[in-house]
Length: 252
Image (cartoon, rainbow, N blue to C red; front, side, top):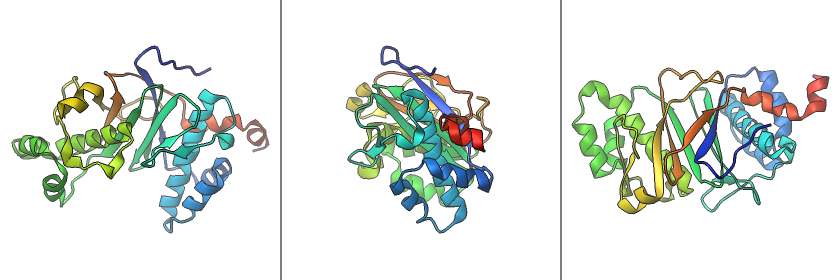
């Protein structure tokens, strides 16, 4: 049995690959809601469609392992700015994916957000930094040695995203209105404004595979209301959580 309580500052983080065989993807469509299926079929590119289906199926399987109800029956809705929620439940959760890797964070009674990115060269990185980084972030980034700037860019980006995903504001809030640190420190990476930093916490996160090994070439961050979270890595592949649909599993 999987168990989390609101008594301790802890959260579970799940990871899984998004490069499943086509047959798996087609089978997992069975746990999606009618609205999710409609959204999936709006994707014209097959890879994007498969990624959406796996993301939603994984999320439903993971939530089912806490709620103890079939994945397809979980009533997932969205908040004012689009953050997924389960009405009437104390579970708080968030997902992210990048370059074939899926992650999901689950907590109880604590708003959380998670974001990951594969570190890669981007020709327009400097223009993006000038447009979206806060002045403190841009100053810190410009002072870094050239060889450190790429990973620092993605540290900054994932930390900003994790904070906005935790608050539920998403991109309704301008990215320049708050600042995060770009280094490796273990303290609160949210450094300004002071009011936000006193209520919310952003911490670095190393994305991992289902076996909890670090995923090479990725950076990530976790945002949460309150202080630093203790993270428990779940070793189970998210796809196995969908075995709650026991009759289909036995027939397959």
